[in-house]
Image (cartoon, rainbow over all chains, first blue to last red; front, side, top):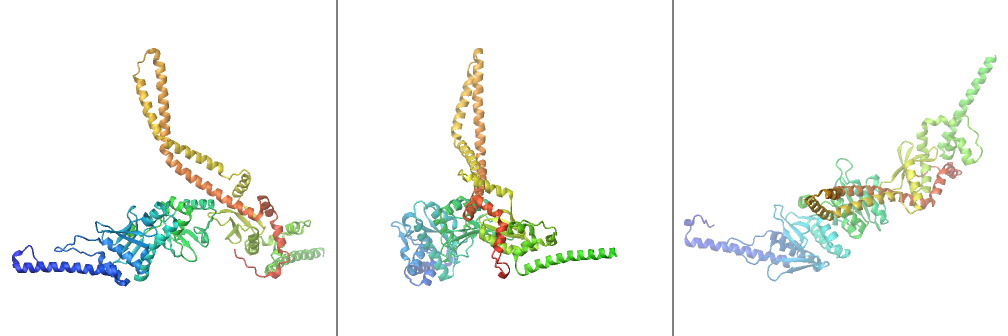
Length: 313
Length: 294
């Protein structure tokens, strides 16, 4: 390599040769990049898709001797990856990727939601790495994705703020549901196809899912408030199984329990949602039952479902 | 001789007395073995049984035989509870029982959140012993229903009114602030007025008036300052009261569903012993084991 501090060690031709080598290496990097881009954009092999995305995620395109004036950011490759992943599962039309005329930047819309939300990824700069999927207008980070560590984490706070609060008055619940389902499907493919560790959080419809509430030692008044408001809405909050906590049977076979999951030692209050088909999550309950939504939002300080504290701490 | 005769008859008397007791106990034992709860109840209180079930004039029982089993009442109660609670489950579907120690049962009203501990079930006497305080609340709440009120309506209204008042006080802060500025201005003017002796009384009165107003505003400021806390505390109080009203409402509804009204409920409680034992007449022994799913 060139030793700039000691030019006397090099002959002119040696210097040129080194220069040439550095450019070749830079071009090689560029070529490698185009190959990965091809792969990311065109491959129909999901394995190759993930491989390309993972490598592009922290790809350094510029070198000291070769720089490229027009570049997308690493975050954009994630958007591309997400679109392609959905495409390979025949859901390509559920997101719309938008490029812009005068600069290299991608944004995304969820087809059902239209322009009510514009999304992109934001690269996490700390050593944790990974990216946050963010709604641009509100800055809400709906989930965190780390391709290297095969991690996917939904963020209950952001999902609640955006879908249960901000868009509540203007976007029909059904639209919200189909929009969020796209994100869930994306996470599910990563989990099922590539063994990602996924925390679906409030979107998890599995019956065994315990939604941990923020106040581990939940004040009794919070449950009392649900009791009173349920009665006003013709539902009855009953005693929980074995007298631990409370239970409310909503329509059809949907049952919500709120109870202390740690009867010995430190309390840990959780919510669960049971339904025979395991299709209903806490998020769905919030969308469907106004009095539960009101109760949740009014007591959000105590009730907010905990997201991965290492990511959203 | 006479002594011996006396002795003999004393022995006879005692033997007879013991035989009576043995007879009593073995009859009771047989009744238990045959699952004849009706017979068990009869043996436990023959006077009451004759009076309330047979409707015959009671022979005052002088033998006190039932006292023989006084100290095993917990076991008797435990045994009898199976069928009794099964029966009660049909008539009073809203009561839940918890055997907190052998043969003693807490009654809970309903299965809703924070249902009330409503008293005890006396199995041996087939009687509810309701907690007087809780029972009175229920009775009162039935009485208030005629006036379309709940037990805590008045209290909740009073507290809400206070909160509303406080909220107004908080909202009116800027109005008060303006008012104070004006009053302070007036106070300044007042103190600059030339005090001619014939005017001094009037100026003094005016000054006092301004100070009084300022003091009143300062008091309101202070109240407004604490208002937030008070409103929060009021919300908590209202929650407790609404919760109680909600529970009472469920209780009333349960009673209406089963008995139409409170009077019928009370009447049923009065005749519970006779009703229950009559229901046992005829089924008695042959039933064998009864499944109790409480």
